Amino acid sequence: MRKERKTMPTMNENRHTTMKISQRENQYGIPEPQIEIRLAKGAHHRMVSATLHKVAADVEIVTSVRENWIVQTESLHDGRGRVYLELADGTDAEAEHGMAMLRKLVG
Image (tube, rainbow, N blue to C red):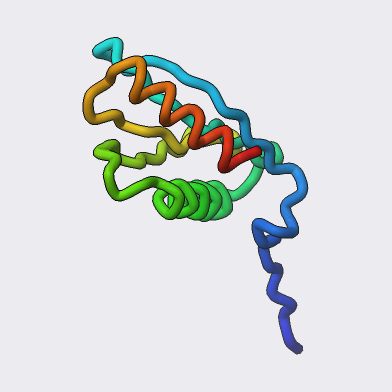
């Protein structure tokens, strides 16, 4: 008897993924432009991780080589996570530029 292997939906099949652009401050008060990602409740951690990596890669691709920020990911619980910019200078101008780029990417 053959066992059927259950497969996870791909990102394209996961219609319950939402992304929201926002900004928060880190523990030192430096702005962190971010894309908040929410998958369906109970999403497997691998799907969350894969989604975060894909979005982070998209951010890296559209980031100019002149930018000095670092693209980071953070996996939270319950199908949530975020991709955020660790700013080099932490200025308002750099934060606004990062927010504009993320808005353009996410739409």
